[in-house]
Length: 295
Image (cartoon, rainbow, N blue to C red):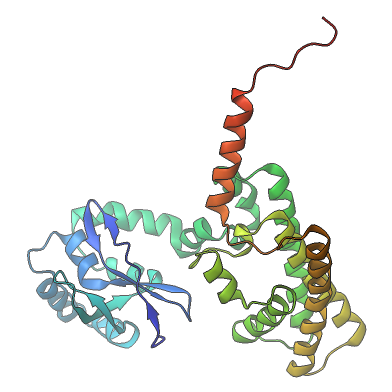
């Protein structure tokens, strides 16, 4: 758990009851107050005591919580910061299994059916290519944008395949190289780019404009092709390749901005784009019918 926790002021609600949350910016992970979740699902008047008894009754659960769930500073009802036991979505799945409450059953069944991957998929459709198109449609994206987005997923997969072939490790090393590419073309790391758009765990590419996503694809395609040509052997050599690939898109971005006189990078996110599209459609719908020149 990162020491730097960006707290989310928007309290999560389940059946009109509050569940405190905290956002770990470094890990890009939500943490939920365990005692709040227990209180909501069990309807206990003393959820702290209920949780204590749960841990005593189920030694494996007690050990799991002690090993995996950190103490995170969250605000009390009085507004003061106090450390409280917290859990990620994955950890909550395990804890909820031990709450023998009829009220918890619908929630547990839903979690069991959907699973953590499907929960994350609602936020990041890239996790499941098969459901991506349908998911994007439901989110209100246009078909033209979706086709570009799916192409960007293919481009990304080709890049990560190239990284795998050259010994780049998933996780931290992937993230470092992605940041190198992003910074080379946009001037920002992935996290800085997300902050600009007001994003937390949402997928950055899902919140890019058409021009942004095309430039990002160009950066990744360029990196893949340079890697194939130069055959980097070390991680540092892969970083150099990532910078070179990103720079090609960065030069293109600069050329576009010089010709248009405006920045390619935008703080707008998916919600902004959808509002803009709705406004345009409303404006079009309010226009009078075009006169028929043949009449």
